Length: 503
Image 1 (spheres, rainbow, N blue to C red):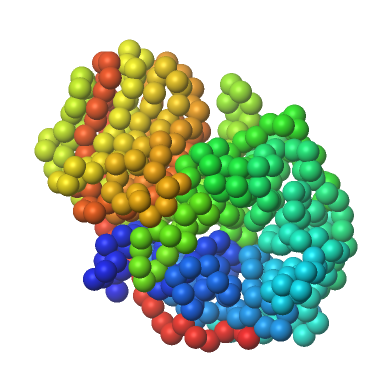
Image 2 (cartoon, rainbow, N blue to C red):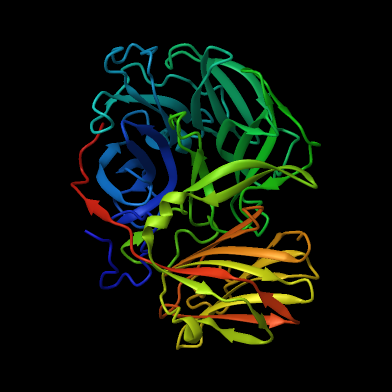
């Protein structure tokens, strides 16, 4: 059945992943196997705020339509189940399956609240569980934890992948203010390899949810290290930074000066994002998903029976720019199946407001806009989404400041937390005054990919009535070049029982 906005759920997103009910945060254990994208996630089945963490579970054939499955992992005597990753142990290095039926292995952080309350520092350890039926049922490893804590308060979020050059599994682990790398031949015994980051990048908060993977650019392989940080993001609160460099199977070497900071997304609502493991080589993409919220207000957003959504799935790439190599992200092509009609916007000048809704009947709260603009003679261009209550969300570009922005100060409910309203910005330098804004509007979120994903912003908002009007508002002469608009349909989601899992 299609996900619909139920009574009391006016902000339930229509083509983004949301939990059936209760609390959700970080995406976990993202792995592809036998035609299915597995998504696990931090989940509190007992309430709509952060609490005792479990791993929720859903599967998809296309990252667009999702089937909710029973809870995969429950807390046990070692603690609650914090973030982590999953791999397919194709060669059965762990001995937990067979060569004919290799196990799906989840590696996650145990958080032992009793030890934390007792004043201990070693309350986070790494545990392991495995499945022999494509993630439907799980068994905890009988010798957990597989990696004990050396006495560090923040010791968590293992992202594991097979490293061909080193001939072993490599774990990327967030440790307080840096990353530690561990190696293993069998997923159950781990040896520390190296550290990175104590003096690199942003350090406004604790480091979390890392990911490490190679991408090609200019015919050469470069390694990307993602590190989420809370707080300390570019527009306050939580956000995800990245590093570019080389990894020899043991040590990460940063290509850029230590204090250089790059951000995956400049919006306030893309955090803890990681990538899917085991994507077939015939596909070749590096596919990413983030949690669409911010720890500044995640527990207070006005959604009632459920809290939080995920970003749209994105493809990550490296591109050569005048400033150097940069990571860009673009929405996955599978989202095109949600388009229900296509409107071509003709080239025309924009001076003042241009009402696209009345000219092209763009009156849906679910829209994809692919706008091409020449702003070389302008001061600013704004895409305004609004409703009949006078509420509006502004997305735009300031030519003089060379920055993209999202302004949600008048976008509806903002009084639930004083850290929520704001005007958020992202640096973007144009070439020849040409601006492409690829926007995805859902009933309570907007994601903007500018100029091929060179600047990306994600923000949530909570209008008291759906936004069904869209205008272009210019300061100075703007030329709208031929563009496209698409009405989007809700994605399909089906639910099954949500109580089974590994205790």
